[in-house]
Amino acid sequence: MDLAAVPSYFLERLGQARLAPGSSVSLASLSCALLIACAIIAARRYRKSRRIHARTLIRALFPKSIVLSRSTLTDVGYLYFNIFVFGIVFGWALLSYEMLSRTIVDQLTALFGPMPPAPLPALVSRTIITVMLFLAYELGYWLNHYLSHRVPFLWEFHKVHHSATVLTPLTNFRVHPIYMCIFLNILALFIGAANGFGDYIFGLATHQYLLSENNIILVFFIYLYVHLQHTQLWISFTGWLGHLLMSPAHHQIHHSRDPAHFNKNLGSCLALWDWMFGTLYVPAAERERLDFGVEPDRVGAHTIWGELIAPFGRAGLLIGRRLERRSPQPVALAAPEREEAY
Image (cartoon, rainbow, N blue to C red; front, side):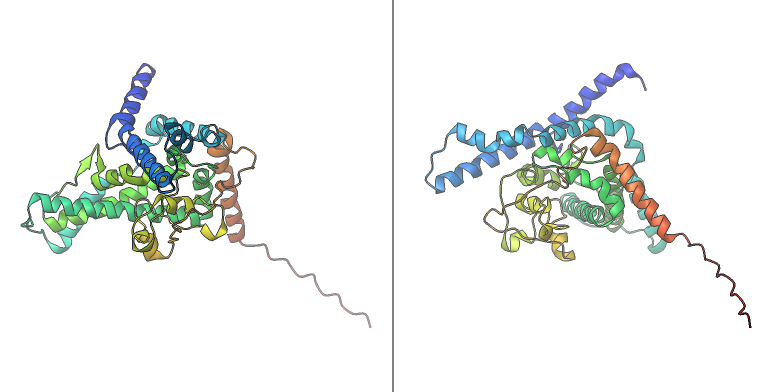
C-alpha cells in the first residue's frame, strides 16, 4: 500500500462519513437528531410551564458528566478507528451479498425454471424489494445480536459495546472488529438471500431504493431516532407501537445493568423480531432509572488493551476450557487386589 496515499484516503473516508446524506454518522442525520432532541426537551418544559432558554437546552443536551466522561472519549476513538482502520484491515473478510444473490437466483432457476418478468411498474417492484431487504437487514441484525449475547465466545467481543458507562450517538461505533466482521457477514447472508429470492420472483434484477448506498428505509429511521437510542434522552414507544418500533428507551433498556433487562430489545430499528421471538421489553412511558456499563471498574476499562486486545485472551480461555471438557479423561487403572494370607 502506498503510504503517501494514506492521508488522502483518510480525508476521503471522513468526507464520505460526514457529508454523504445516507451515512450513519452524517452531519445531516446528526443535526436532525439534535433538532428532534431540542424539540422534545422544549415541549416537555413547556408542558410543565417552565421557561425555555438556549442555555438550559445546551445543558440538557450536553451535560458535563457525559461530555467529559472517559467513556465518551473512548467512543470518539472508536469512531475514527471504524472509519479509517477497519476499512483497510478487515474489508477483505466480508462475504459478497451480490455473489450470494446471484447464486440463489441460479439455484432457484435450476430447480424451478426461469420466472417471467412480473407485470409490475418499476415503482412497485422496487418498493417491495426495498421493504424486503430492510426486513432482512433487521432480522440479520437481531440474529447476530442474539448470538452475541447468548454465545459466551461472541459475548467477549460484543461486551466492548456494553462497556460504555454513558451513552452518546458515538457509542454506536464502540464495537470490536471481530464483532463487526461477524455482523457484516451475517448481514450479507440475509440480505443476499432476500435479494436473490426477490430477483427470482420478479423475473429480473430489481434494485432497492438507496441513499448513499444505504437502504432508504434504514436511512429514514437513522434520521428519525436511531441516533437518539444512544443518549440519555428518554423517548419511549408504548402499547402497540412499542411492539413494532425500537424507541430510544427500548435500546437504553438493552444497555441497562439491571438483570431484568439482560438480553432484551436486540433489534435495530424495529421491535418486531424481538416481539416474535420473546426478547422484547416494552419500556414505561415515564423514565426508568438505569445504570449503564458492564464491569465498569474492571482493569483496562476504556483502554486499547482492555477493549481491543483483552477480548482475544478471554475468548481464547473460553475455547480452551470447552476443549478440556470435551477431551477424554484418562482411565485410572485399578490397583491389583492383594491375596489374603491364610
